[in-house]
Every structure is written in C-alpha cells, then in structure tokens.
Amino acid sequence: MFYFLSKVLFYVLMPLSLTIFVLVWAIFTKNPQRKKQLLISTLVMIFVFGNDFIVNEGFMLWETPATSPETIVEPYDVGIILTGGMISNKEGTPQQIFVDKTADRFIQPLRLYKQGKIKKILITGGNTDLTIIRTDFSDENLKTAQLLEELGVKKSDLILETKARNTRENASFTAEILRKKPELGNKYLLFTSAFHMRRSLGCFEKAGLTVTPFSTAFKSKARVFTFSSLIVPSEGAYYEGYHLIHEILGYCVYRVLGYC
Image (cartoon, rainbow, N blue to C red; front, side, top):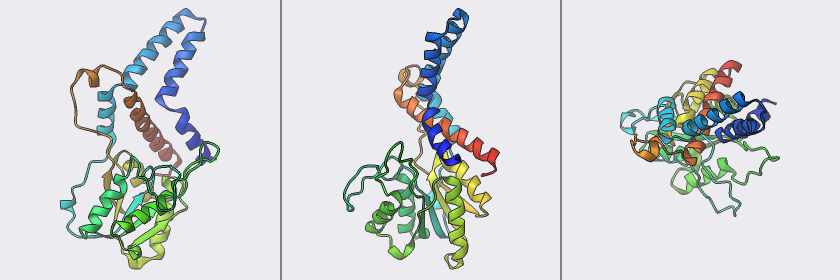
C-alpha cells in the first residue's frame, strides 16, 4: 500500500496540480473574500514555483555536494548505483539503449572504474512503475549493465539487484547481497542524484551499511541574475520544483516511518 500511495502522490503533489486546484477553487467559491485570497495565492504559487532562481537556490541548499575524484586515494571495493531515470522508457530492440536524464548516475562510476578507483559495480533497482499508469519498457537495471559492459566494464565486475522498487528496498536488498558476499570487501561508494542522496544515505545507514556518497546528476546550476531567471515564471522551473518538493516530502515521510 505504501508503494502504491507513494507512486500515486508522485502525480498528485506536482506544483502545477496544486496551483490548478487553488485556481479552480477560487473560480467556484461564492465567498468574495476567499476568492480574493485564493487568487492572490495562485499568483504567489506561480511566482514561487515558476521562479528559476528560487528553485535553483532550493536545490543548492538540498543537494549533497559533489565529490572530486582526486580526493579518492584508496580504491573502493564496490560502487553502488541506484537506478531511476538513467535509461529512457522507449520501446526498442534488445540492442537499442536510449539514455535518459539521470545517465550521470552510471557515467560517474564508469569513469572511476576506468581510473581504478572502484573495483566492482552493483546496480540496484527493479521496475518502479505502476502498469495502471504506464508500462515500463526501459529494463533499466539490465540495460545499464549491458551498456557498462559495452563501455569496458568486465561482466565479472557487475553485480545486479533487480527486486528493489524504492530507496528503502535499494538499501535493504543491497545490504543483503553484500553481507552474503564478504569477499567483495567493505568499502562502498554510493551513486545517486545529488537531490536524492540525503534519503539514500539515511536508508543505507538504517540497513546497517556504511557508504560514502558520490553525488551525480545535479539539478542545481551556477547562479544567474537575469530578468528571466528572477522575475519571469518558467514551466521548466515548475517541472524541476516538483522534483525538489517531492524529494523533501519523501525524505520527511521516510523519517517519520523510520526508513531513514
């Protein structure tokens, strides 16, 4: 039930959905004072949710900072990649692989593997979509492994965990695999999107696994003080702002439930 509700709320809690809800309420309410308040609230929401500068500042505050590869002196035994948005949900042949917006989650560990800074790569995550909403054609875990192998990672250095549907399960199932294979070592580097790293670290800590964060796929950018970024609402900011709000709420829910 938790998994189902979390995926449904993914669509319900979008800033655009909330803005439309408040606007529709303002249109249909009979109370003049409430109508005025709701219309003002709608304008405020459009400015805040659609403001590139505000959303970017939010990501800068929330994201876990980047790690420089030069700081990694001793190699890590296993690099753990959390799936989610690395491979496009586009139907194709078994040999077709289309990368998506968080491909940096596997690009960074690939670079470190090539530099000898991680010995093996574990990819964790199964099908995370609800078929009643959409069908998943991505096979993200398997195709990421296929792509890494084609790019030079030895098949014997790839470990797949294909059951996890959320961050909590990523941590618990990964911990289970690594405890059963002590020969893999005990020094782990965790790769996920920078804005998702807080929740991920908490989940792995709860699972009893000590990992070092290596943030990827940053959404924050360098500050830009232009009229368009400071004043003009942007649909892109609405889209990115949703991910920020969703992640913060997700982190809070996980904390309340004791998952992280």
